[in-house]
Length: 187
Image (tube, rainbow, N blue to C red; front, side, top):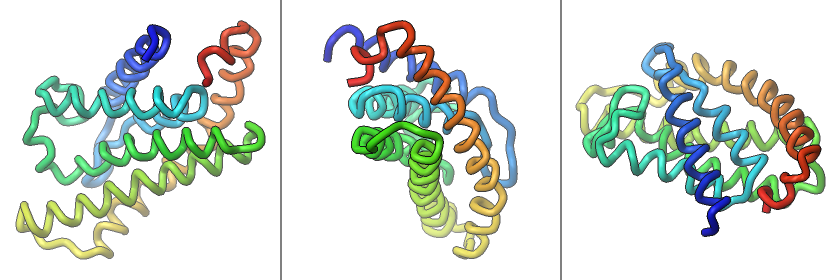
């Protein structure tokens, strides 16, 4: 990795940390603006930067830094919501790949990629939540309860954030292109 990539990875790791601290609890899930950071890094920078910024965030939290919405440490993997953090890493990677293959960056493409990323995050988050609750916490929960309590409660807000983020990403891309630095940072 070159210096620019390391700086951008560090910057987006820091932005993810900050966005995780801006949260409130909605049902069983802490709701934060982390997903917006994932959207932005996946659309504006390379697959490598998108993936490593989110992976570094998870690694730092597992090493004990209290940077997750509810703390940190290796035992955070036992929290039912840890699957969402895995989802951020996977979604950032896949979204950046999809963006790289897209013919053009327009609102519709960005929004659809954001929705795909949201779905990935929710798949990892909900499956992990179900497994931890049923097999580790021994607190039986049904698939329907997970779907109703997580997807139906938090999903609409994240879909709205997908659209708002698409508008923000288009504006940020325009500003970055105007500065002449976008192409060197994008690939």
